[in-house]
Image: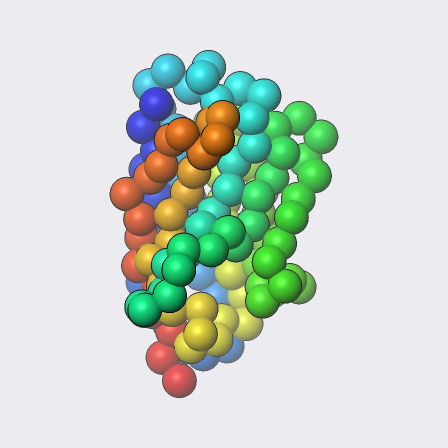
Length: 116
């Protein structure tokens, strides 16, 4: 399974970005498992930002992004999204998508930079 993350860039504080994560290859390996977005900010540990379950669409958000970020997935397109609104400088990080059992599949990361 290959995960391709895209959509990062430079945005001013208060702005918005939409990240995408497209899965290809043996995507059946991810069926029934959740997908998620992680991020690693400079000098910090990687953290789970949001995840979405495979079937019922249940979601989880880190407290730091609640009510600002929205995770979604289009199973027909094997694609997951992260809509990020009201961005803050502290959201600056490399964002990674992950999927599969035990987060066994990872995308390459996309850089989000929020200027103040």
